[in-house]
Picture (cartoon, rainbow, N blue to C red):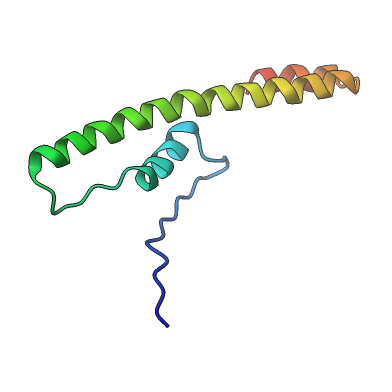
Length: 91
């Protein structure tokens, strides 16, 4: 039995996690496939669509990150860690 798991891409960072743009690039490559055999006008349209989807993902991933920091800050403040909570906002 043969199986196809698709291609694997590895992204690394140094001393940080991936940012919204890096996650969006990873996601958009899975969401929008572009055949190299497609006629050029269709490929150009697909690349433009991919860019639009990536920008939308970046926007919402950044909102998720801010929201998560707000939640973490609220939890820290509730537990009395006001100084640490203040630093979360600066990230």
